[in-house]
Length: 158
Image: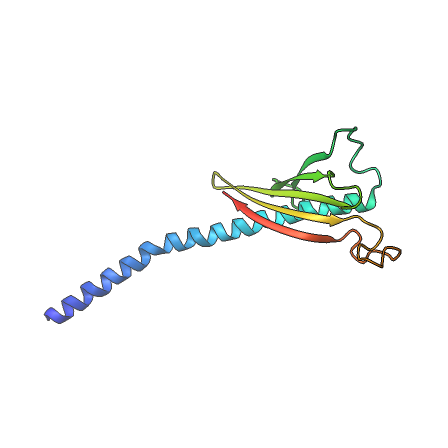
C-alpha cells in the first residue's frame, strides 16, 4: 500500500514537472519561428535591392558627390491585403563601387513585431558589379560573378 502511494506521488511529481516545462518549450519553439520569419524578411530586402539595382539603371537615385549610402524601408503584406507581415530596412553602400573593388554592399534588416517583442535579423552582402573578370590574365573576359552575391553575413538582434 505504501509502495503504491509512493508510486502515485512520484508519477504525479513527474507529470507536474513535465507540464511545467511545456510552456517554456512552446516559447522557445515560437521564438525560433519568429527568428526565421525575420531572417526571411531580411533576405527579401536583399533580393529586392539586388533586383532594383539590376533592372533599373537609375536606382538608387543620384546621391550627390558625397552620398555613398541610400536607405529605404518596405512593409510586406499578404497577397490578399491585410495587416503587414513585417518590414525590411535596406541600406545600399556604394563606397566601394569604383574599380578596383567594384562592389556594392547591401544591408537588410528584417523586423518582426510579435507579442510586444521586436525580433530583428540583419543580412549583409557584397554584390560584384565588375563587368570584367578580376582574375589576372582574364581582364578581357566577362565576369562570371557579375551581379552575383560574393559575400554573405547574418546576425540576430533581439
